[in-house]
Amino acid sequence: MMTSVDTDLIRVLGDPLRLQIVQLLAKETLCTTHLVAETGARQTNLSNHLKVLREAGVVETEPCGRFTYYKLRPDVIDHLAGQFAELAASARTTVDSARKRPCP
Amino acid sequence: MMTSVDTDLIRVLGDPLRLQIVQLLAKETLCTTHLVAETGARQTNLSNHLKVLREAGVVETEPCGRFTYYKLRPDVIDHLAGQFAELAASARTTVDSARKRPCP
DNA sequence: CTCTCACATCAGCGGGTGGTGATACCACCC
DNA sequence: GGGTGGTATCACCACCCGCTGATGTGAGAG
Image 1 (tube, rainbow over the protein chains, first blue to last red):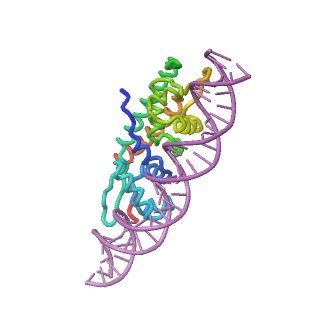
Image 2: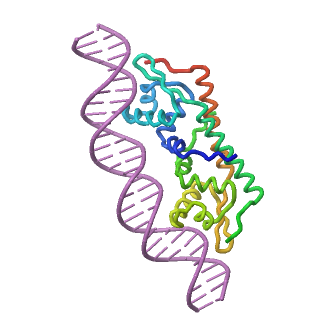
């Protein structure tokens, strides 16, 4: 199968603050104010990172009056987990069967 | 459970060339020469990235005469896949149960 | 021994990226 | 209406990081 993993999504999750946001949102749907309180980051900074997460399709927004709730999209994370699992499985059979290309 | 995912490992895999290396190594154990041929990157560049992958514990080296074989460590990738799966599961229950913190 | 090849290391340059302050926007309350 | 608080956008700067060329090392081949 070997569906190649897309780098951009990994890059998005590779930032410490963004990963922290994702982990917070996995436990609870929150709005920006909560995230500011939880992370201690500036509102502007947070909003920038949320924009990145939004454009990557990792989170969805849900306006609620003046507030904006952010929720994680489980399928995206799940899909990524599946791709890594696939990669690990492929690597495991490669290592177990000592499949290697001969020295040129 | 919620074992927090480690950012550094994700950053390591977030580089396009490094991810390409990892995907190649998942299918076949290769030495640097093969990787140069497969990726088209310069030897120096590749060696730098392999150093990063090595220090992150993603790959292992196995010297074979003048050559150096690189093999992927399936457990590392598998562990990462598990963490993402855990994150996805947590996110799914959060979304399904509409668990959200009230507006302040 | 010498030459060649595989690979690693180092120093330097340039572009991408995260953090910040100023500002605009929008919904609510008075 | 005006004011206030929550959020998004923009422009700018500084710094990190990846690419490169030069060079070092070490094992085989001749």
